[in-house]
Length: 393
Ligand code: NAD
Ligand code: MG
Image 1 (tube, rainbow, N blue to C red):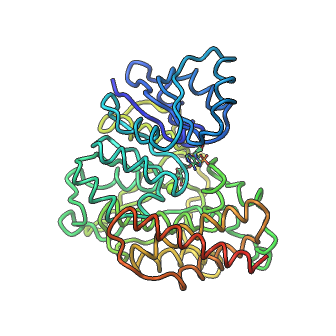
Image 2: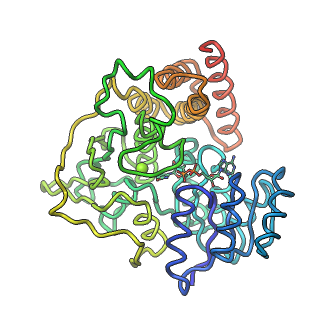
Image 3: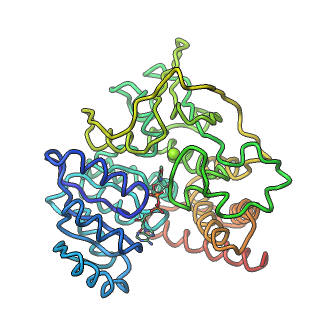
C-alpha cells in the first residue's frame, strides 16, 4: 500500500492522478490533496479519495471552503498556507508525492518532498527549469526517487536501459534523445494570422486536454522548450544530445536512438493517465483506464522539424538552456508573466515571444548557488517582464 500526497489535485494532472488512484483502492491511499482555487472540485476530490488532509494554498479561501466541506459532510482535516504544503509533502506517513502544481509555485513544496527523500512524481517541469542543478543535487543528497510524469520524459525513461547511468549516454550506446511534440493548434495556421489568436483558440489543443497555462505553452511550443531543459536535467544530457521532432499525431511520446541504428519509442493514446500510472506503480504496471492503441485506425504517422519563425519560443528556451541556469530561470518567469497577460487579454499571442526574448537579453547572467537566489532571480525577471508588458499596453 502506497500513501500519496497530490499537489495541485484540482488541476488536469491532479484529477487524472486521483482517477488512477481510485481504480486501485487496495494499492494506494491518499494522505493529502492540495488546491488553490476551484473549491467545489477540491471538496469533491476529498470525498472521492477520502483524503486525510486537504490543503488550501490560499488561506483567504478557508471560510468558504469550510462551509462547502460541512455541506458535503466531508471530514478531511483542512490545513492552510505554504508551511502546510511543505508538511504534507514531508510527513513520515507519505511515501509518494505527485508534484502537479502549475508554474513556479510548485518549486518549494516539490523540494520539500525531495528533501524528505520521497518518491517524487514530477509533472511540474518548471521546478527543473528554475533550479535544475540545485534540484538534482537535492535529489541525490536526500536519496529521493525522481520519476518523470511529463509524457515525453516518461517515454524517454521507459526507452532507456534500466541500468542507464545519469549523463552517460556513451556507456549505453545512446546517440540521441528525440523529444516529440505535436506543434499545437497553430501548426498550419498562416503566420500572418498569429497576431489575432485568442486565448480560447490557444487553449484548444488538438490532442491533449490540459490546464490553460501549459495549453498556451504548447501552442507557442514554449512547452517543448521547457521540456528540452527538463530533459537535460532529468537525464544529464548535453544540448546537442536532444533533437526536437514535430509529430502532430501525438502517438509517439518520445524516442531514444542507439548507436546500432535502433530507435526505441514509447507509444500510446495521448492520455496522461498512462505516465501517471507508470510513476505510481513503477517498476510494476497497473491499469490506467487508457484505451489500447488501435493500429489499423492510425491514419498518418508524420515527422518534421519545427520552424523557427512559427515557434520562436522553442528556440529562445533552447538558447536559454545553452546559456545556463540564470537564463532558464529568467525565461520561465518571463513566460509565466506573459502567458498570464495573454490569457487575460492584455497582450497578443506574438507578444509572448517578444517579452521572453527581451527578458532573456536583459537579465543578468549570474551563478545561482541557492534556492533563495533562484527565487530572487525569478522575482527580478518577473518585474522586468511586467515593465516590458506595461510598455506594450
Ligand atoms: P492546471 O492549471 O490544470 O492545475 C494546476 C494546479 O495547481 C491546480 O490544482 C491549482 O489549484 C494549483 N495551483 C495553481 N496556482 C497555485 C499556487 N499559486 N499555489 C499552489 N497551487 C496552485 O495545470 P496542469 O495542466 O494540471 O499542469 C500542472 C503541471 O503539470 C504543470 O507544471 C504542467 O506543466 C505539468 N504538466 C501538465 C500536463 C497536462 O497534460 N496537463 C502534461 C505534462 C506536464
Ligand atoms: Mg509534455
